[in-house]
Structures are given as C-alpha cells and as structure tokens.
Length: 300
Image 1 (spheres, rainbow, N blue to C red):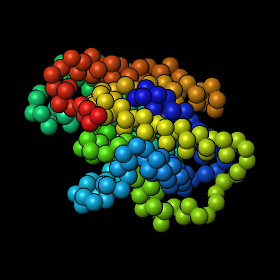
Image 2: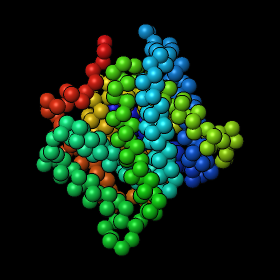
Image 3: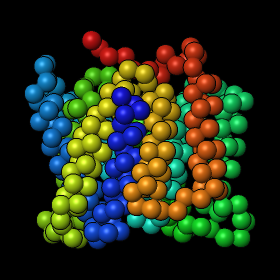
Image 4: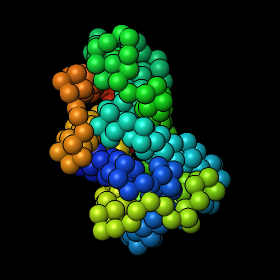
C-alpha cells in the first residue's frame, strides 16, 4: 500500500505538470478541486464502511482540533507546496526535493525518544545534502539550475510531508484512514476555496485535460492518500514514509518519457543519493525495538 501510494503520487505530479504547462491551470485552483472532490468521495466511502466512524470524530472536541490541524497544516500544506514547486520547476525535481521529508520524520522521532542519531542516520543526512546540492546546482557552486523560489517551495514541501506523516498518527489509532483522509481533504478544500475561487473555470479543457484531472482525483488523491494512511496504521509512520521513496522514480520516469523533460546525469546522481538515504534509514530502523513504539496497530 505504501509503495502503491507513492507510484500514484509520482504519476499524479507529472499529470499536474502537464496541466500547468500545457493547459494553463493554476496550482492553487487544482489543489482546491482535488481536495474537494477527493475528500467528498472518501467521506462517502467512509460512511459506507462497516462500523462507520465518519461522524464520531465530531463528538470529541480535542480530536476535531487535531483534525483541523491535519487538514490545514498537513493536507493543504503538503499538496499546495508540492504542486506549486512543480509549477516552478518540474514534477521530477519537486518530488525529489519533497523526499527530504522522511529524513525529517526520523529526526523528529530521534528527538522525541531522546536518542542520538546512529551512524547510518548521519550518513543519510550527508547524502541528502550532497544529493540536493547536485540536483539544484549540477555540481556548480556559482549557479542554481532551478530558481530560488522552486528550491524554497521544495523544502517547504518536504517539511509539510514530514508533518503530514507524523501528526495524524494519534487520530489513526481511533478512526479509519478513510475518515481522517476524507474529512482532512474536504475541510482543507473548503478552507482553501476563498483563496482560489474554484467556481471560476480556468485553462484549456479537452479530453486530455479531463483524463489528467481525473487521474489526479481518483488515483493521485483518493487511492494514494487512503493507501498511505492505511499503511501508517499497519507499519508505522517512519517505515511508511521510507517505502514511499519510489515516488521520485515514478515522477522522474514518467516526466522524462511523457513530457520530455531533460533529466541529466547530475539530476539522476542527486536523485540516487537522496534515495540512498531512504535505503540507509530503512536498514537502520529495521528490527529495532523502538520501531514497535512508532507503529500504530490496527484495532481489529
């Protein structure tokens, strides 16, 4: 489920780049509609589940506050920063930059559990820094191959991904992934609407645009977010975020083949270094007793 969600997300990012560059859609407008439609679908799905807990969350004020934080600082933030970064660069670069996020997740738990990072985690940090340097400069200390704005929003996307991964763990102990994801998206879309005017149609709409938009809603949103949060309940936030490291490969591969973007040797080398950090972190956490503390087991 974690790997599947990553592939769906990666292809979704390339679809978004296509809509931005060739169909003239605005990132904020697309994010808003993505959350409204996907959120509504997931809420309806949650209502149809056996022992549905769709509306039970509204009976606990503290859980409502947590849900609102997840919706605004997690769901809205992770989607807008990522899509906006794509609009400033491309799907492959934006996705790779976002995947510094898992390193932040591991760092958070290291601080929370008051333990020093191990050697593999220090090595991962070094590799992430080198990989990011190669990706955004191609090895030159004098120039950036992407804009400063794209780099800034890419790092914000990584921070938002870390928050999105960690914050809902407590809610997922009590409520189903479809309930949390559905309400998170729907509330985020409603809150974001005044800033994006979703009622005003944008861009060029034809069959290709409709198919790309439909993919983003169904596969890149409904299934991807549901699969990811479901995987968090089974294997924990850290492992789920690490397994999602295949997303940059999916985004880069599809963007190169479909949209013809140039992804040169330095780009692939930087991507390799960043993905290698995920491998090291996975190996370092596998089999640890502390991993059981991070995992959220299904109540059933």
